[in-house]
Every structure is written in structure tokens, then in C-alpha cells.
Image 1 (cartoon, rainbow, N blue to C red):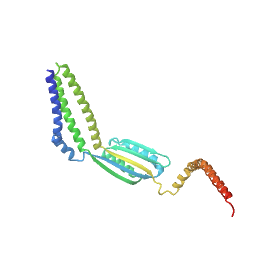
Image 2: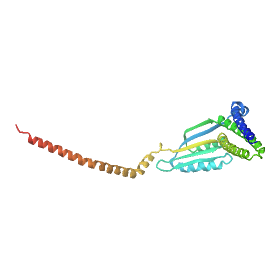
Image 3: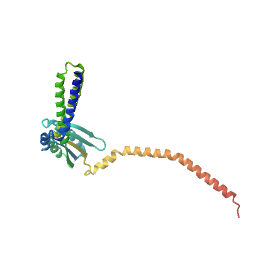
Image 4: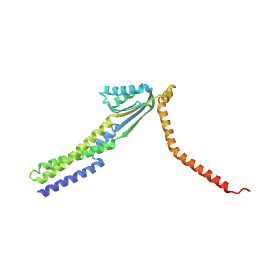
Length: 262
């Protein structure tokens, strides 16, 4: 009984592998046509770079996040928010939302600054989605066969243990593939928007002067430190050079003193 049961289990494994290979050739052709026949497998990513007044970068950074929070129906989520208020202020934001939400975000941001770069890219996820669906179908069928086999293995403890172990492994693979499927579907059902805010200093006459004055103390300290470091390096070499010159001159005078006068 045990040998027969194990033989059946091995046959199920072979059938599962065979089904996987067969499905790769056209087992899910109808579903592939549905996903490939439209743009539901394209994952879009938008990029926007705005030039705004330096004083407005901070408030605009906060306002963009607040505007995203109001787009609950558009599934807007803040994925990244970075603000640098140092000497050269800048900000970076990254959002995820459905297509309507992304368009609302773009319209809101474009009104608040000068667009210096805007682009969009699309990644076709048809192949990963189809491959994921095929693997899930194969594993679900294999799990059903194992569950049917387990119901007939109650009298064989060893075979029951092996079947349960195989079922646990298959269930783990199904959960992992289901998680990847949700990620893939989220990427095609929503879009990404990366925003960069840079200061507009090209039209400000006083801005370079202000930056130079604000960095005067630091630049002065660095200059003094560099001078002190240079003196520290040059001082021992100056002593060595002075000694060498003195020796050369002493040898030269001695040589001249030993030369007889005509």
C-alpha cells in the first residue's frame, strides 16, 4: 500500500510539471489574448521637474503631500518625501495613484512652477503576469490532486505525512505567487509620479551675493585652515632647503679659497 501510494504521489508531481510545460505553449491562450489585447499590462511612470522660487520649495513640498491625502478616491499614496533646506534647497516627492489621480497631481503641480522636464515611461508586464497566472493555475491543480490523494491515505501514516509536507510546500508557493500577482496588478492599475523641485536662482540678481555672503565665514575658515596646513608642510622643507643652500655656499667658498691666485 505504501509503495503504491508513493508511486501515485510521484505521478502527480510528474503530471504537474508536464502541465506547466504544456501551458507555456498555449494552455492559457485565451487569457493571454485578454491581457495582451489592451493596455492593462502597461505600468506607467511619470517624471516631473519644476523650477520654483527657493522660498516656496518648503511650502510647496508640504502642499503637494496634503493634496495627495485629499485624493482618497484616486488611491493616492506618498511613497517618498525628501526636503533639503540647506545652502542649496531642493525637494523630491514620489506618489502612486490611479491614472486620474496622477493627472490631478500633475495639473496641480504644473500651476505652481516652471516645468523644466516632464516625461513618462511604460513597462509592459504582459509576460510576467501571464507567467504568474500559469504557475498559479498549475499549483492550484496540483494542490487539488494532493488533497484528493490525502483523503485516500488515512490508513497509511507515512504516506499521509509525506502528502501533508508536499501540500504545505505547494501552499507556500501559491501564497508567494499570489503576493507577486497582487504587486503586478497594482503596478498596472496604478501609476507612479516622481517630482523634483529645484530653486529658481537664474533671475535673481541678489541671490548669488546672498549665497556668497552666507558662506563667507565658512570659506574664510577653510582658507585659514588650508594656509596653516600649508605652512606646517613647508616649514620642515624650508629648514632642509636652507641647510642645503648653506652647505653649498660653504663648499663653494672653500673651493675658491684653495684655488691659487694667478
